[in-house]
Image (cartoon, rainbow over all chains, first blue to last red; front, top):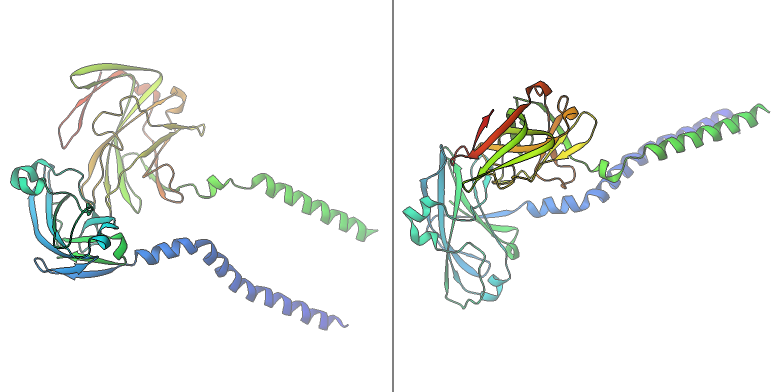
Length: 179
Length: 197
């Protein structure tokens, strides 16, 4: 075997190894981050835009936004947004198996979670709404029942183009977006 | 002969390299530890999830904290570090629950839980996007760990690879230790009052 032949063989192996790295490295990264990627894909959701007041079928019920009111906030430069919505049950079994997530979003992609307790502004201005339950209590319902719910959010006073997103775990990736 | 020496040298070199790699292998906890976002006292520090700024640092031998109409005195064998800061969430509502005082000797001191019921303490309130809120922190640290320390703040102590604000405490000196600091209940927009003696 001449030196040139050995060189050629070595060079071929070298380039083969370099080319293999280009395949093996991304494959290794994919294998290790597979769970994260799957989670991201699950997060890429599919909104169903609903105009205020109109009915929308979702997860075994007909949903409707009945009010999105701005009330004075207890902190300077803040507003309390009170969202009232209802679901008329069609398939109680399908609805009962769900976990409900509610959030208020704006055009900048900011996302506010609901307050655990309605603030004093809600109790003063809309006492009936303060007594309504949070989203998620769908036990022991029969077809035709209407569940009335309310959630309140503390947002900056200048937050605009607010939309209420309601998602039920069993109906994902679709979720409701009330404008 | 030369070939044998070369071979032996190669084996020894490989053994040394393997030993070195074995000794310097990072722990799993180091590999997944939070990603630091550097900042300085008095400046705003922006992580992707939240922004925080340290406004004032008070050092004291004793803290008097009043709650429910009763004032209690909290002594310490070290020094109380009371930090007044402001924080805001950026994109999503979140809570900050982890704060540590990293002393110059590398020891991390956890947030004091002795008057954790004080309103405005870190973790007592959820932060909302676009609404900055005052935040109070208290640490008990040895006097030698005051200057040259770093304040570490994160959403939680356990989230792997999340961002953590590393705020260099540039203006903390042992000669500024006061005999006592009094903390009282404030109002909704400023949850505490602080008086230094």
